Image (cartoon, rainbow, N blue to C red; front, side, top):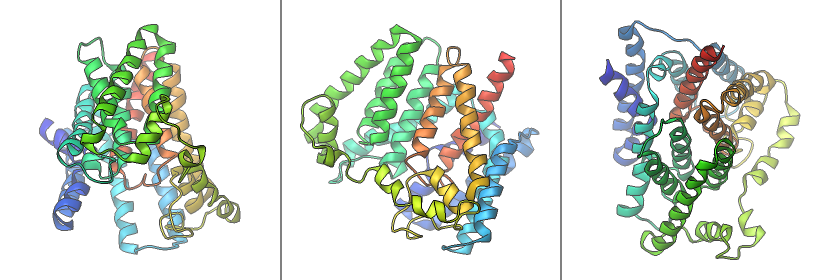
Length: 363
């Protein structure tokens, strides 16, 4: 049973099907994707345990059914596949997630973050923003942030500071602006909890020194590197350059569409790349509201608001839950691939189960 659990979690959390599809072709990637979802279906049967999360099921049903009835663009076969995969994940995959311990989840996140460092050392490129097996620097930054936040749930350990250093360095070299903002927020929260967490800022300083000293060797993205250096006063970067291609500018191009059809949205595909706009909104909340309307949006925003509230209530006892929920929300504000980013949905499942567990203990 452990082997099935670990293999299923590994395939999902480490983005293995998508990576193999990119590296070795869609046939192998598609086969691994099919295997991962078959494992999720088999696991609860063999485990003789089924966990249901009605709220997430309502999100899937409301988004796909409402947006699908007004299909805007895209392939119908792709729509059906995404719908089926999402529903399998939130019905059968939750059993896998509920059996995963903090340390087990941390191991998979650490593996994913390590591939970012390996990418930068052995497979440096001219782009200079590294993503490892996640193929997208922002997605890799999310994994590093989630792992970093989870370290605050560990008991006292000599490895904790090492893990925080590794997650921070891997996240920094993705040069994701969301990573930097979220990392600072998490550290501010940790300082409110205990002045002893001041040492994590020393970790950040050490990572900056390492980043600066390896900049030429690892061929970092010059624009993002200058923006990073501007935070510590080593570079002068104009506000225009920092705000170039900012998420707020992208969001603003979709506001008019939201007002046109606020109740049922514009239909599936309308808020994705080459839908109503040339690019997607880079915001999952806007995506759900724009494609499926207010009902699906209420369910969607409700689950993540609930995670934040539950996490805040037990912040002192289990700080990692609030920090991880905050990371999820901040990433959702800058990414619109929620329904195909299965590692993100899987972490959401784990967070919901853990929050319910500690809420029950608190009561």
